[in-house]
Length: 99
Image 1 (spheres, rainbow, N blue to C red):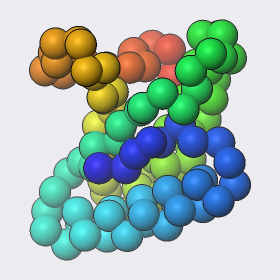
Image 2: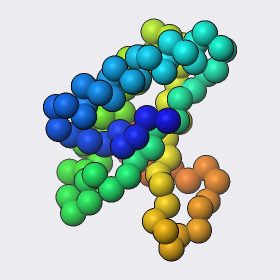
Image 3: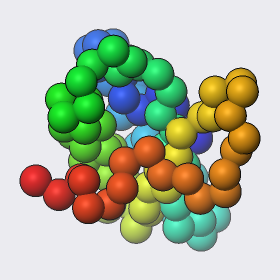
């Protein structure tokens, strides 16, 4: 899994991009069609309209790296300790990723 994918600092973004390329190559080699990307709380306190744009931008950057390998991204969030995990829970609904 790639996490936290929402990190904004230059060093973390560079590491995520390198990891995404490496994981995408591995996924392609074994015939795996997707890599899980996980949001943590790196944008906590940022208003949702602004955070949504940052999440979308981060996902687009990683998707552009994975695409040439034929690999998609599966998006999820880590539940807080008191939350009950819900299978298939998405942090950013697909409709919110469109411009």
